[in-house]
Image (cartoon, rainbow, N blue to C red):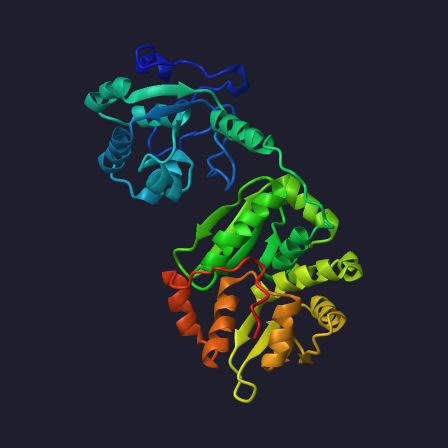
Amino acid sequence: MSVESVDVNHLMNTRVPDSHNRLLSVTSLRKPLNPRVGSDWNGVMRARGSTFREMRCVIGPEFQRKIIECCKHRNKLTWAEFAKQLGVSEFTLRCTWRHGKSTLPYSIVEAISQLLPVSIKNQLKDAILEVKNPFWGQQLGGLKSALRAGQKISLPNTDSVAFAEFYGILLGDGCVFSNLKSFCITSDSLLDASYIISYVAPLISKLFGKSPSIYRSKSDRSMRCVLHSVQASRFLVEFGFPRGEKSLGKTFIPPKFFENSDLLKACTRGLVDTDGSLCPHPNTKIMVDLTVKIPALWRDCRKAFACLRLNPSLSQSEIYLYGFEKVKKYFEKVGSSNVKHIWKYTTFKESGKVPTTAQARETMSNGKYKLDHALPFTGPVV
């Protein structure tokens, strides 16, 4: 409905569609107003999560703020009192409607118009830009969801080295959302940005035929690489990855990976590139430290290291490789795709010292280290 066809007096006296067949009648400001056309309202505030099932009026945000504040001040009400009269929450009235963040329900416009002075009420005609049908927002959202759902993805070959490495990354820093709408890999935005943006995101795109989204947190150093796809999420859960919180489900290295050394190496590489670190050690000078706090997954990691003949040292939730010879063997056999680990390893070989976390953060965040090796990196070893 266009501006030219909207008549306020007609709007205020026109019944909504038959499915919402009772017109609001305002008799007194102090008597709670019925904000929901077509409901048997008893003066109780609209329940959290419920909706206004009626036509919506699109009003210019500045004028919408003006009429709401005018009603409040003219009738000497607090926000809480005004919200109670309308049968809505104070937050909805004061923060959402007042600031023009949402369209106003037909019945609310009707109620407010009858509380306005004539001079402002007459201006309402030009302020109503459009009257939308009930559920227009849900219908628009449904259309967008349908379009997103219609984006077909490709499903990866689970016998490929690329998928095995991705699965190791997911075991380390990933999760499949419990609603199965997306899967996500979370990392440090300073230390691992290059790894996520330059390697993990392209790997996901290659496997699933759809590019993931990258989100950086404003409150901490985390960043998330998210693929929004129900199809991909269901595929991963059916393959064996836990849905929701990993520690609450059965998290393990797929048995088929143990039957193929290339797949086992790739999965291990993904795990160490995310949950592992390359650290200095007071005696051996360098070590690989893989921390795994899920018991079943820790047992599978221990088994993987043993199958690859890496001779690790063990603690309750960690797996260690002490000394240059063992670290060197790890890079020769398994390798790394994380530029942070590669830089630490090559720096150690040149200087005999493993860079500190602070040095790594400065180098990685400033992009000072440019990788000129193919990934995964396994050498050169001297």
